Structure formats: C-alpha cells, structure tokens
Figure 1 (cartoon, helix red, strand yellow):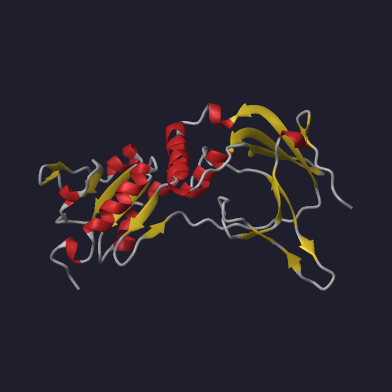
Figure 2 (cartoon, one colour; figure 1 turned 90 degrees about the horizontal axis):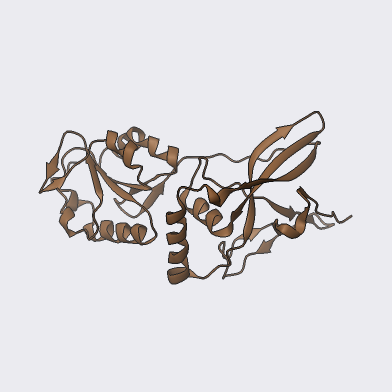
Length: 258
C-alpha cells in the first residue's frame, strides 16, 4: 500500500512529543526520511537535523545527507518510512556504534537499539577486584548530557542519591586468578548509560555483590525493588553496589558468609 502523505501514517503531534521529551532530557534527535519528505515539520518546536538522500532543502529547511549522521551522532534517529523500515534501519545501523537508537512511530512508539546477548560464565578461578587511580567522570565527554538527564529525572520522575560507584575498565588473568580493575564513577552516570544504551568507552560496567539464596525445598529467593528506586518493582538477586567501605587499600575485600 502506498501513501501520498507521511501524515497519513505518522502523527506529527506524536513526533513533536517524542522530540520535546528527548531534548528536555538533554538528548539530540534527528529525523531520517526514505525518499520524499511531505510531513509538516514546521509544527515541531525545536530545531533538529533532517536527513534525506537526494534532497538539499524542503520548505526552507536545510536537508542533510546520510553521511552527515556520522558527524552529528544523534542519540535518537526518528525513521519516517512506512514500507522500508527495515531497509532504513539496516542502512543507518551505524548509529549503534555510539549508543544511538532508532525510533519508529508508525502505530506506536518503538525504540530499536543494538542487540546484545548476555551470558553467565562459570569459573573456578579466584576473582580479584582492584581499584585503580582512574576516575571515569573526570574524562567523560558526555558530562553535560549526563547532568541534564539527571536533572530531568529529579524534576519529572524522582530524586535519587548520586553516590560513588565502581566500573570495570580492564580485565587480566593468569593460571589461577581473574583480575578486574575498577575506576570511580557515579550513580547518575550509570543510570544515564543504562537508559541510553552506550556500548563504547563511555559505557559503565558497574560492579555489585549479590547472593542467590536457595531454600531447602529448591526455591530461589529474590527481592522486589521499591517503587522509589531506579528499577522500580523489578525482581533482583539480593545485594548491592560496592563502595569505599568494601576496600582494603586498593583491594576489594568482602567477607563471605559461610
């Protein structure tokens, strides 16, 4: 089925709402159109980048090419396409390199990001956690975005405590030990990267100690997160993040209960 106008299948009000929300959170947003642009983009409050192949201008709006997406590195790329969504997604999937996401607005609001498979690895080696001298947040280039998103959470959602956390930046191993080197970061950085799918050098890999409790009759005991936490109402293993009280000089030393 062909559509004569993008407004036949995309609600401009929905587009505007998504853009306003993301920009309020400190994110950058771009729009990519496959082919002709005939959506009334003048109704959008914020100035954003528009990308389209084969066009330079549309109604006095400067149009950029697909190669400019590499330079601009938008956090979110709204796809204006009805028939070729997957084609456009494949063509612009390089945005996942910097943690970008696609937004599809055809029937609802759908976010697409890099598919990452997690797995549990069992080891018989001793695990050694060592705190290095690095401080992640001293070199972070996205500090403005992190701070703006944190302020947004405080105003619109809830207020969290921004405590120190530790993130793994290097791993080594020998014949009988695994060594994980930690650097200081903070809670607001962890929340930002979890929400925005960074998979690069700015992504946190924070460390927590947990315990999987099993009952005699074979049940596992999980805890339900409180409604005022970042992971509200989710079930998790009981535990918590590391802090300075877990350090013995630069070595993480957590007593194990027997």
